[in-house]
Figure 1 (tube, rainbow, N blue to C red):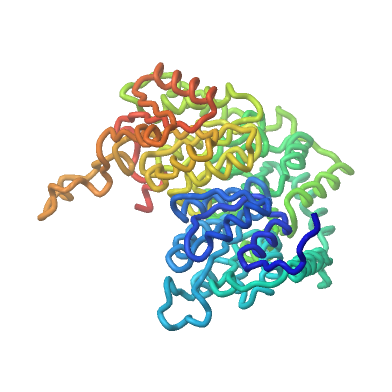
Figure 2 (spheres, one colour):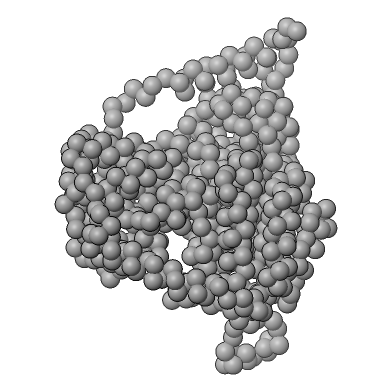
Amino acid sequence: MATDTGAKVDGSALAGRALAAAGARHMFGVVGIPVTSLASRAAAAGVRFLAFRNEQSAGYAAAAYGFLTGAPGLLLTVSGPGCVHGLAGLSHATANAWPLLMVSGSCSQPDAGKGDFQELDQIAATEPFVKLAVKATTIADIPRLVFQALAATVSGRPGGCYLDLPSDVLHQTLTESEASALIDAAAADSAKPDPSPPKHKSLEDGIEKAAELLRRAERPLVVFGKGAAYARAEDAIRKLVDTTGIPFLPTPMGKGVVPDTHPLSATAARSLAIGQCDVALVVGARLNWLLHFGEPPKWSKDVKFILVDVCEEEIELRKPHVGLVGDAKRVVGLINREIKDQPFCLAPSHPWIEAITKKAKGNVLKMEAQLAKDVMPFNFLTPMRIIRDAILAEGSPAPIVVSEGANTMDVGRAVLVQNEPRTRLDAGTWGTMGVGLGFCVAAAVAEPDRLVVAVEGDSGFGFSAMEVETLVRYQLPVVAIVFNNNGVYGGDRRSPDEITGPYKDDPAPTSFVPAAAYHKMMEAFGGKGYLVETPDELKSALSESFRARKPAVINIIIDPYAGAESGRMQHKN
């Protein structure tokens, strides 16, 4: 059937078609004025829209989608307060260097400054959190800005961008032939090579220096983070580790880039590894609080850092011994090629390897001795061991684990095993609570062949608990496991001198309703709920829910005094 080239296309339809033409496949958000039609039009153009109950969770989903797929996650919000709610996911994406484009409707331009419905200067509101914030002032701007903003999310260090679509622009129209021409022109412009000269100096000298430092090191260490996972650098890093015999240490979301079960893993000897290494190759990980800023006393004052980062500013900030600006996969591949010409390999009998191996084995044995006990009422270790074993039994493709909560995330990071890349999502660089169920939705749509397992504290779960309805509505293969210890850190932890004053009979600021029936929330929407208090009950619930691959909540009752306040961050609280 011939297309009516004179038919009218409005801004919503044009935006949806432009997003699809630019390669978008999924979009997360909450609809309302003025973007309801945009969501429907995008879906009609081939962009699946996942409707959430809250923009924060939708934003976290879009952020995680960017990490898991390498393509920009899309977040759609309404104007004003919807945009403000979306800032949580937008800022989280930028903090973690994940590509995300937030698209928001905004008030009609002729009425701006008059107190229009949900009026807000959304460009100003988003600018602190993004690489690029742009506004379409006419319908003809939409395709060009869609392509421009999506490209900006993945250029250089990935991060968030923002596209503002005023209500009057969404209602403007043009002909079908005009719409097609604008989209074609935007696509053609985006495909043109960048005419600007390379911003980074040649890697050749740096690669040679890096290889020589590693070759001459007495106690080398490879550290990699979620940036390496995002860059799909797992094959290159695994080759480096296997051919050189250098031990490795992943950051939490770098786990699985090289299997946790690899004999050269230094995770269980972390303090020794970072405290005594003399050369550290750091790939796709920033020397921030997660790595103690690369400074003494955690690190040796004499350690030489080789820092691989896609962002030149990061290298200039950290001032490593050798800085290599570029994609992690490419740079590590070049290091491998350089080493191949003069190969070396640390034998298992090398003193450094022996020290790491001995320390790691000793710590693992201590942990396994604790895990082997069936403690009841449950502490954190007993159910975590049962969950670990159930996840490992799933084999490959391994489930994606989503983890949040102070004690739950800390214990899970030590106990749960990741043997495949991009199978762990947690609070990330910002230590953000509330990411859980949004991450779950993203994981389920980005990796449809994998089971998704959320291991969450009851506080973390509560931030986004209403999204269990989203899981049921889309029938996503997500099992949410809630460690229910009656509150933040575990209920009432106040000292006697804190329980005074006119409101001393109020619940503690950290307390929730004891033994809350979180599993009933899932059942209310038609999913499966489990209440668990014993090892056998947990094993049965995991077996049944994993086999079903349907939305489920497993509510595990934990001893409220089993954990520690603030998890491993007590010194900051």
